Length: 118
Image (cartoon, rainbow, N blue to C red; front, side, top):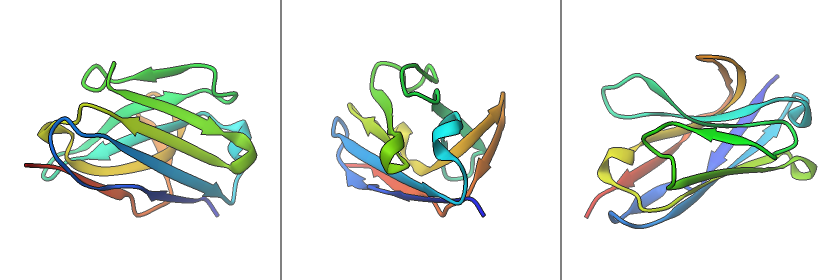
């Protein structure tokens, strides 16, 4: 059973930073491309980033490129999302997921709320 436990969210002022973590269990984390996705209030799921199996290559949505950095530690079954220069548009519930293909994900957690507000 896929379990993905996200943490690290919270309330931050515009321009601030947060680092999210995702601890995985129940599947072969070190054999899967992983992703971060988010869902803002009243909106659909939005892909944020993905990272390859060894953690050597990541890609980002245009809306976060240059501000967010995804990394992973396969020894710890953990993925991270460093978020800098946050804006109110980044307010959302953030989920980590197994990246199955374009637009296809498997989520396994409750997500973590990120609120950017002054």
